[in-house]
Length: 423
Image (cartoon, rainbow, N blue to C red; front, side, top):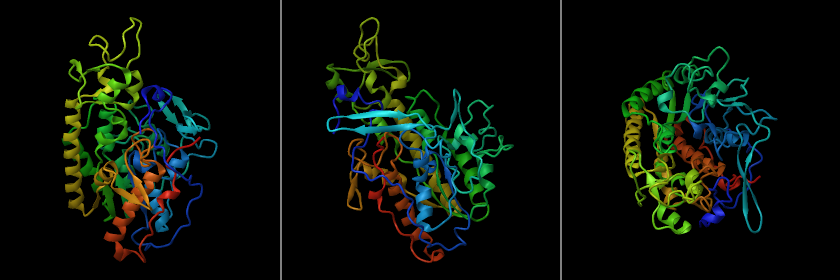
C-alpha cells in the first residue's frame, strides 16, 4: 500500500512501516546460558546497525534495541553501551509519528537532545567506559584506520566516534581503539556505509575503492582476532533494495503527478527521461512537480530536471552493484582466513524483500507501510527488525559455538519489539 503523492506531501519523512507494534519498555530478564570463557569480553563493532541507529537518528531507545545488546542480554552477558544520559536520551533527534483514524502525521523529535553544535555536528561527550558496544553510526571500512577520525578539529571527523573516545585519545584510529578491548568474542557489522554514502548522495559522494576496502578490512579483522577471539561478521545487504530507493518507481511518480516522462540529470551530466532502470531517492520524491519562479514544474521538462543528487541513474546503480559484489567477496575470503563465522545479512534482507521471512507468526517485507522491518528513515531496521537480526546471530552462535555454551541461547519474541515509532 502506498499513499497518493498528495498524501505523501503531508509526511515529513515520507516512509513508514505501518504495522502492529508493542513498545518494548523493559529489558528482558537475563538468562545465564554462556560459558564465561568465550564471552569473558563480548564486544560489538561496526557502523549504524551495531550502534542501534534507527528512525533517522541515534537515541537511547534505539541503542537499547541494537542487535548486539539483544544478543548479549539473551546470552546473559554484561554489555555496556555508550547510552545517552537521561535528559539527553533523544540523542540526535529522530522521526516519530502520531496516528488518528484518518491520517498519519510525522514529526522530528527535537527535545532532550545531546547535540552541542549542528555545523559540524558534535555531541555531548560520553563519560563512561564503552566496554562492549563500539558501534559508530556512519562508520565506513575506509575510515577505520584513519588517525584523527575522532578528533573534532579534523575535517571529516565522525561525531559519533568523537563522542565515545576518551579524552586524550582523539588521534586514535578506530582499529587501534577496538584492538585495546582485548575481546574474547565479537560481532561485527561494517561496510554498508561504504555503499550508502555514495548511494544516498545520488552518486555525488565518492564510493570506497575495492582495493582500499580490502586493505582496511584486513587490518581491522587482524586487530579483532589478535588475541584469538572468536566472532561473527555479517556481510553487506543489497542497499539498492532498501525502501529509501524503492518507495516509488518513476512510472508511478509520473502517473501521480500527471506527466508522461520525468526528466533526470545523470551522473555524467546528461538530461534524459527516467527509465525503469533508474531510482529516485526518498528525500527527492516531494520535489517532483514543484514549481520554480519561471512556473516550470521540476522534472517535467529537460530545462528543469531532477538533479543528479536526487536520483540514482542506471550507471550509478551498476557501480553500487559491482562494489557490493566485490565487498562481500572480500568479507567472505578474509573471514575464512581468520576462522570468523560469516552471517548472511544479505540473504536475510533478500528474504524480507521477497516476503518469505516469517517468525513468531509475523511475516516481514520491505514495504515501508506494512513491512515491519525498516524504520522511518527507509535505511535502518526498526527495533523489531533488530530483534530479527539478533535471532539470526543467536542461531549462528548456537550452531557454531555450542561446545562453549552451557545451553542454547534462547531466541527473542520479535512481536514484543517496536515496529513503528509512535510519538
